[in-house]
Image 1 (tube, helix red, strand yellow):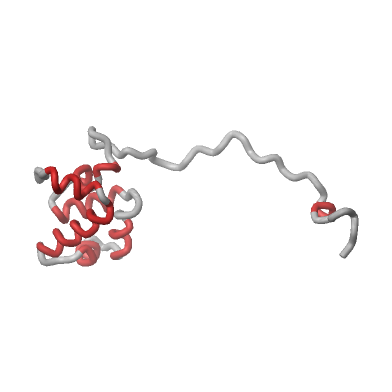
Image 2 (image 1 turned 180 degrees about the horizontal axis):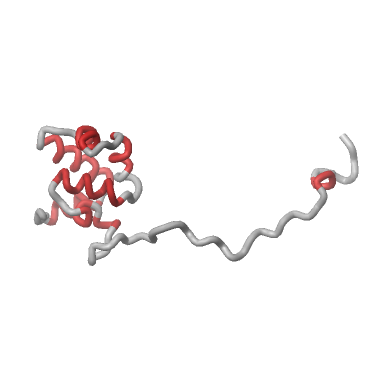
Length: 116
């Protein structure tokens, strides 16, 4: 685990700068994120998608590529304990449903009883 200075921590809080920083760090190592994805048997787009939405497995792969933990690389996505700061699983179904329209279909689009 690498210790980060305050400048790098601030840089990693901005998503646009973080993307450029990660690409730069991987390029310094003489590879690319596309190559890292291929090495893991993934499509390049799958790895890049983790920059936009939470994707723990891809976050771990990217963090390993630059020598950090996912908590350091994506600080807003994790709590101080290192746990994901998001709800896991599918959202619960709502208990209230919209009432069904019981008007007969042939009467729904009638305007003042006139025929067109």
